[in-house]
Amino acid sequence: MESRSIGQQDGPYAPTLRYRDGRLYLTTTYFHLGTGQYPEVKIVVYTTSNPYESTSWSDPVIMQTSGLDPDIFWDDDGQAYMSYATIGIQQAPVNLTDGTVGQPINIWNGTGGRNAEGSHIYKKDGFYYLMISEGGTELNHSVTISRSTTVTGPYNSYVKNPVLTNRGTKEYFQTVGHADLFQDKSQNWWGMALATRSGPQFEIYPMGRETVLFPVYWGKGKWQEMQPVRGRMKGPLPPKSKRLPGSGPFYTDAEHIDFSSGIPSSFVTWRPQWRTPSLFQTSPQGHKQTLCITPSRANLTDDSTFDPDNDGLAFVARKQTSTLFQFSVDLLFSPEVQEEEAGVTVFLTQLQHLSLGVVNLVSSHGKLTPHLRFRIEASGKPGIDTPKAKVLPIPSDWEGSLIRLTVSTPDDKTFAFSASCTKGAATKMESSVKPVEILSVVEAVLSQVRSLLANT
Image (cartoon, rainbow, N blue to C red; front, side, top):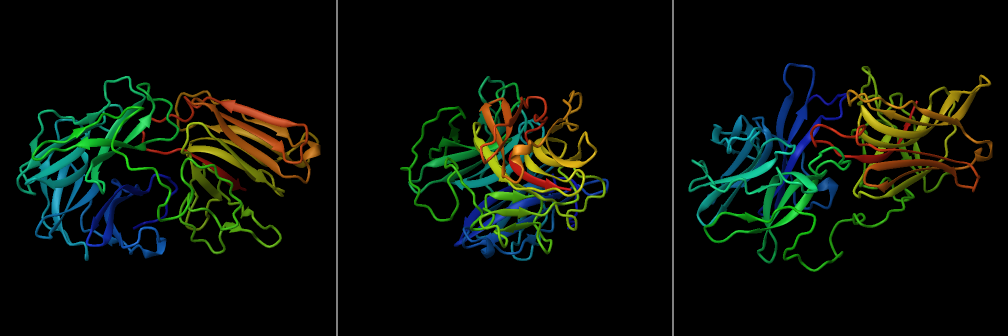
């Protein structure tokens, strides 16, 4: 597939994980906008017997069909079926070894809501249950279900659909949909879904769509009963334990990153870093326990000539996982050319982000000197009167010292930015912005990250 893209929305969408005979199967859609009339859409499948080891995953098997939100179901005879969304929900027998696909058929169009998608099939008590989402990913998002006595249908809709939704409510959690079901070791049924912490106003939800967990009661031969998604819920959770395989911090833990073990796996870059040498080096000679970032030509907004394969982007990010947080980075930076910049950003999209950085600008005396600059990129949100950038010269008592750049959230509507000198200089720069207009989106399809950046 074509890998070059100046847009950030190319990539895998809606992965689903399934387990069979000692192996995990991850199936997903790879989406590429490209330059043609239609986007390029491919379904790929990866497998592993050890999900905690990155190198154990197989190369992708590219399926000989296209569609959105694919899932795999194995019938009692071992035949694998794949369901996916095109116009309605399609289903086809598949070979997961070579990617061949049999004749697809339409098995259900949902209950009348737009965008029937996110299909999953389960077999229980002699019935095949087909669960989907419909209504779009915004405030009308909902989960509906049907069932059949054969895997290929016909599927009959449940009279009490939707079985899960928060549409038409004043709940804090909205856009509930795209659900999946599983059983724990005690045979309790659970569901997972996507939701936004936005309220019905659907304006401020900087963490985008998040995963929520809810109990499910599924009696013998019955339809599923799903507990509505609320701020406080009850269910048969297992005892709390941190004795789990894998590595990395728990999401509630504070993190202090010194890069002594490289870049943490919880950090992400714009695209896989194929460049040699890399833009990112940890603990280079003479600078132990640091991350050295080589500035890239392109900045966060980039331009029409940006080629991520060859240009690279000096951007490393950590996904926001808490409404209230404080994030800071100690920066040592000596820019040499005009507009060379390094700093922190609150990043939603290429055209919607906030940043505070150290940047080389011409001073009032006509010389290139480092400045602090806070600015807002909001061209992706039409009709917004974007404030002008705030620029201040670096105070003289900061020279040669680490500069601490901080982003925090004093409440659930504000991002506060500040800059200070780590050696205790008296001067401090502060700025804040309420992102209700800058960082809101029409559809909850993106996630918020707080990040480090460097660009020339």
